[in-house]
Length: 124
Image (cartoon, rainbow, N blue to C red; front, side, top):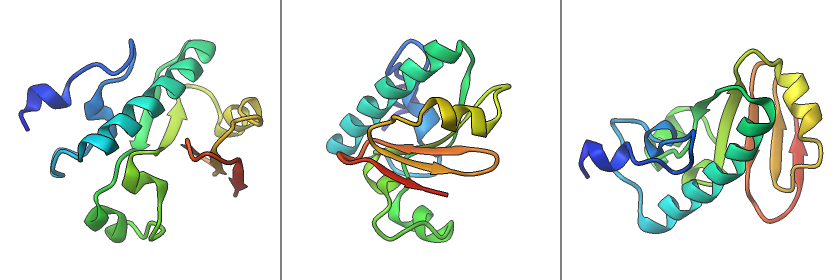
C-alpha cells in the first residue's frame, strides 16, 4: 500500500502509521479494524492525561514478533495490542489509573502493554 494509506488518521491523535513498522506489509482488513478499535480506546487515555502517547510496539508481523521474542499467540499479531508510554507520566501511574481496563494489561517498569482482548488479564 502507499505511504498515504499508512498516514490515515484513526482518531484525533493517532495515525495508522504509529501502529505499524515501515518495513512490514500492510496488514489484512480485519487486523486494520482491530487497530482502529484499539486506537479509539487509547484516544480516551490520551484525552484523560492530556499528553501524547508513544506507541513502542503496535501491530507485529509474525516474523517481527518472533524476532522480538513475542508470545506465539500475542495480541500484537492481530492488531489488538500496543505497548505505550504516556509522555511525562510514570508507567506505574498509568497502570494505577488503568486498573479497571477491561482487556489485557502488562505492567512493566517503563511502559504499559494494553490489549483489547474480550476478558480481563493482568501480568507483570
